[in-house]
Length: 95
Image: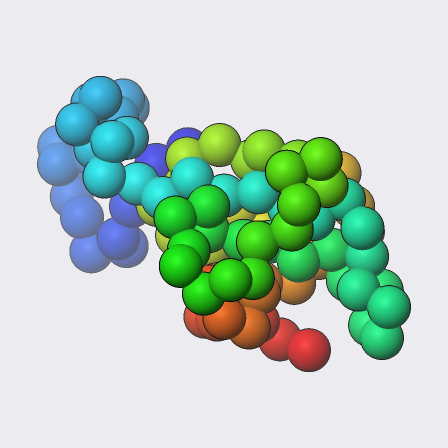
């Protein structure tokens, strides 16, 4: 999925993403275990150095996304209650 700015003219839109663009995108996962307090499954940036990633066996890969919003939408295909991690996906952290 490629996000476009509303101001882009149709001629500027692209229907594909180059391998270089994918390489620059962060890869995300969602925790298979819900948070005890909120019941949310948290989305994490796999490149995080914040010591917040779930154990590998508890990670459900979401693939490459241009931002955490897109990764959260992908995670919602698997879980109803999804939230961004406070530490590594803070723009998507809501509770």
